[in-house]
View 1: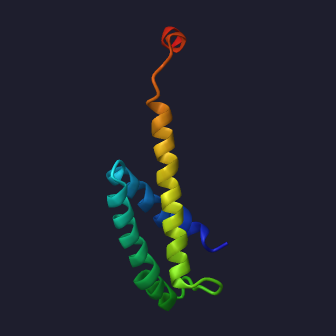
View 2: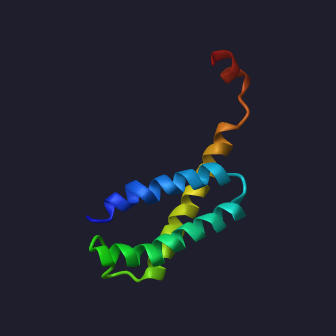
View 3: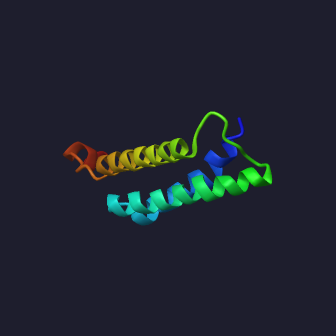
Length: 98
């Protein structure tokens, strides 16, 4: 239950902004997202644990980093599919009725 503020808050918003500024260049997206995820997972989680806000019981730091990176890659993939669908040429019937 405690992960909801992190998923909806800084992780989600940060991933959206990274996607916005790097979409179209997957390598740049992957590198930037990896760096941000690393900073959150390792130094960020240590700081949050010392403050008493969060702790990891069932998951190790590297597993959390892999999870964040996997979610980000899925998000990029879905956005790529959406963009391909949006840019699909219209048929004559769709042009008449739109």
